[in-house]
Length: 84
Image 1: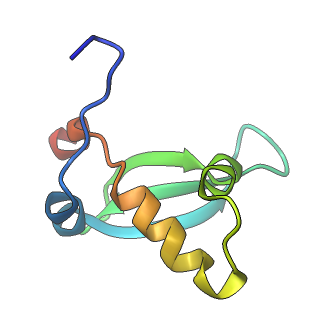
Image 2 (image 1 turned 180 degrees about the vertical axis):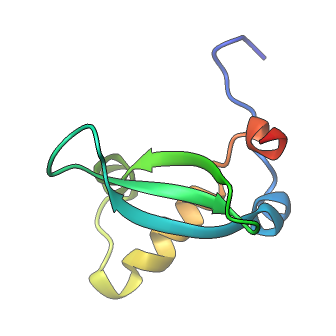
């Protein structure tokens, strides 16, 4: 694995670690939304650009969007997040 490649947690590890995925306003950029990932004990672990996640997901119905976003994020929790 090169230095630029990111190792991700397994889905089981991510589910055990993550307590919440919260959509929030990016404090540094007006009108930008981010998804902040918190641990079960309320520590901030990492964040995702909400627009980029939706773009990566492609066409998803509004009914399925929340679950699709959650599954996307859980599959991409970096391994270093377990150290936080």
